[in-house]
Length: 374
Image (tube, rainbow, N blue to C red; front, side):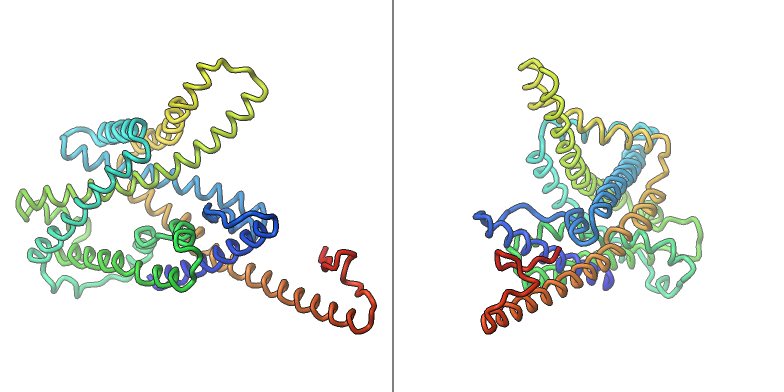
């Protein structure tokens, strides 16, 4: 948690620096503040170059697809157990229902569904936590096996990552550095408390030295029918809310690319007006959902037990790279650039002062009076 908070503060620092730079440029050209967020790929491009920007974009797409596979695989497992069908069939049915919801409801419909799911998630979490704590044995928490920590770190990393929301937060708070830092520090504490509470409850159910035993499976089997339903309901709500967020972000990114490709195609080929209107109204949305859901469903259905493996890949490689390795590199580069620019301004001011007293033009100052730094 501490490491991720530091990483979040670094991302916010870079985001604010790029935001100020963009706004200064817009003001110089007679335009006001832009409400568009500075994305992670924009920050990478500004601080580390275009190659890094392309790599971050590719990394984001890869991580999003891996997460889609993880969520669909886990949903197939949960819904398959509830409906007593194959896990692969549960994954296909979940994806079909989600795709139809996103197609007909759009962002507004997804937001409405997500709100109700969030309310259900919080309520069920509280109940399961209390009931599970009553059924657990605190003495089980005394057992530890640090050799298993390496395999748990990627999942913990994935569970506590919120860094994709930082650009939105910086824009929403108007670039107020104090409010942004307070939001990151205070806002990250409730998820940490929930994560620790859930882990403590799960680990107290059954001793960790019993290999192959799932504490939640034990809780469902021994805690009564309603508690079992509550655990399954919490799992469904958690998966669905995570899936909706990831699928909306990925579909928005994909649809933007499709729109650009459509513009290029229609500039070269004459398309009937009716076909073009259908494509813009609903065809592109359907194609986007097919593009992002089909490969994920196929992989998840063929590997119905791939949730932990996919989550491990996303946490161990994707999230740790984008939100663990990248922020210090961007901040280091940005600070170096700002230091160079500060020295350049100081040199320009010194040159201007010298020119005023000597009446001579500095070699570093061009005809317009501005320094030419190459």
